[in-house]
Length: 139
Image (cartoon, rainbow, N blue to C red):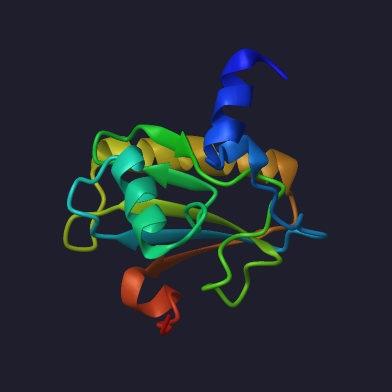
């Protein structure tokens, strides 16, 4: 353990490398969710999840307004338990203004889906809007 890691451990902080999620046993779906996040960066999205008490974001990928793809959860991990298919699907969250995505985001989604199709050739791709794809839950 290097000195920097030791300091983090001494202060009692949990680092992202300390968090281990359950692994998916199979992948039958790829879900592209479009939700208006108001131009939020991945860093701000993670911060908002942390403020709610979550360890990490619920999705495997986040695509911001400029089409930049950020990795969320590790690809082999389950998605957040707020999703019914968290144990069997890869989840991609796209920050779509008013439920629509721009050309840069569409290109990023296409590129990402192409690479995921190579890894999971039998997975069915489906698109969803925010209200339809998330279960609402009380903490």
